[in-house]
Length: 140
Image (cartoon, rainbow, N blue to C red; front, side, top):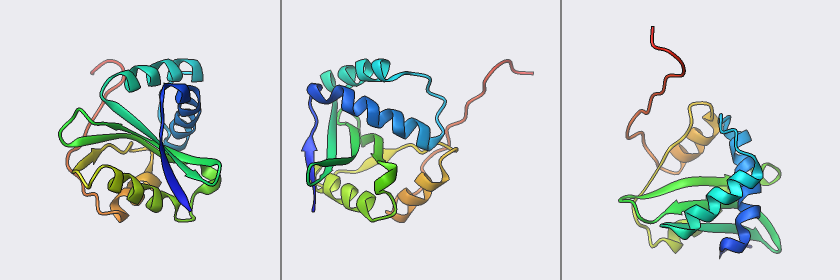
């Protein structure tokens, strides 16, 4: 049975390790190492963010990082570890998170390099809201 545990600043390194897995899984170009990610996570948790760990027995199977200071509330990061994927844990974790957040409206971003993530969120009922574009380098 899955349960939620609210993460604290003591979990910053664990959250950074999970965030590194997310960065790889979604094809992000974020170059930060675990130490940098842990420092950034401490900053998030000192501000308007809450982090939640998804646990099955004593195993952490994933996490979510939520910015409670935005309207709608912003789900910045959500990840189920690769060895736990395709078993319904993502859907179950999101259901627990929604319950914890009392069903408030949520927004999130999905990288273009993450078609599996996009399919997951669409299967849960999320619909496109905007398109965010970026250019690297000089404009011709």
